[in-house]
Length: 121
Image 1 (cartoon, rainbow, N blue to C red):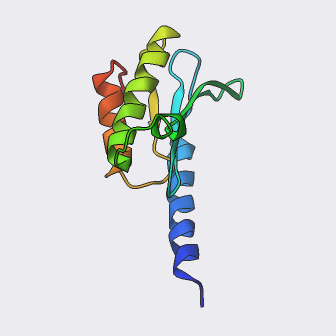
Image 2 (image 1 turned 30 degrees about the vertical axis):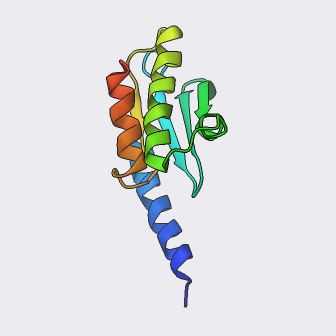
Image 3 (image 1 turned 135 degrees about the vertical axis):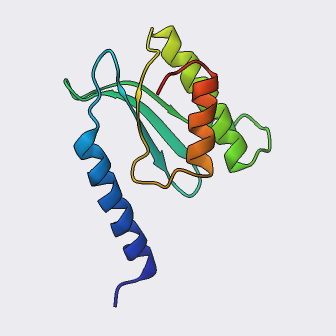
């Protein structure tokens, strides 16, 4: 019998494949890809046409800043930082790729704060 972690991973991978079949990032509207580990969040803006990463940010640096914050608070801060850096590179619209993760908790707070920072999904 499969372990519960393997089952959960298989479901996430299945959701991610369905999402990626419909979503493509371009230079004008890159794909905002999110990866969530147990400790950190990693976010990238990707141009799928050329297969290049335009911008990558992780909340590891935010957490290492010395402030004690929850995972949701660091996700909100990461969304703000991402929006600021993207707007500096003149990127204002993105396609959101949640990576097969359910849209709640850290993923939702990241997306909401990126929208507040000026990104359009």
